Amino acid sequence: MIEIAEKINCNVLLHPTNQRILGECMLKACTLKDLVEELHLDMSEAHYRVQQLMRAGILKVDREEKRAGRPIKYYIPTQEKFFLPFKDTPYNTLVDFMSQQLTPILQRFVELVFRNAPHLGEWGLGFEILSKDQKLATVFHQQRPDPSHPVNHEDLMFQQRVLGMWQILELTPETSREMKKELMDLYEKYRQKQSPDGEKHLYGVFLTPGDLQDT
Image (tube, rainbow, N blue to C red; front, top):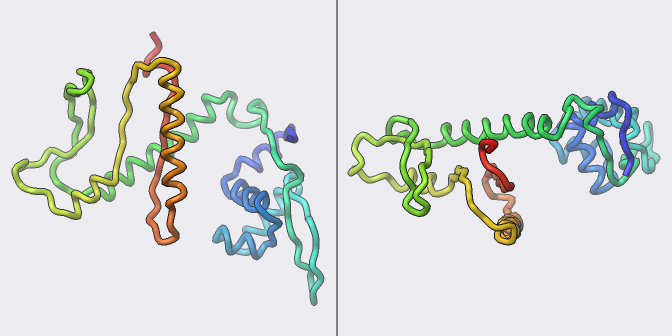
């Protein structure tokens, strides 16, 4: 593993498009045409990004295929792994990095929920005691004008495909490890069920010892 010590090189690798290019080149030696097709980039951007990564010492030319005109170049990483010290990035600590990463992800999740959700009533916050653990829960949902009116099939199907929740669980270390393993096994099960014809779904899960507030 190589440590990228120069700040300018760290910033190059922090760009999402550069990360996608590096990821493709880690899987196989790629030409510019490969990157354009796989990542849906235009040729000028692919060329610019690859040159950035090469100047930063992150990519190199693996081989060239001769042809009439310019040879076709295949690009690979200079190392199998790279390490960016936080002190040389815009993020001073892991907390800073995760905060900046998670904020747009959570915002996007909420945008997708509200954009796709059927309009059944007025949106708001519900406060109620959960019967399972007798704790106050805060839930955002729609207050239907007429709860007795049945929800149509399409709206019900959408509701059954969306999940957003957070809760404090009181677990022993052993139980916490079991839960983590089961969650990872469940993720792997459905990761392998992905289909080229499937619809994209935003997925995330968090589990850590602690509370929402310091005590």
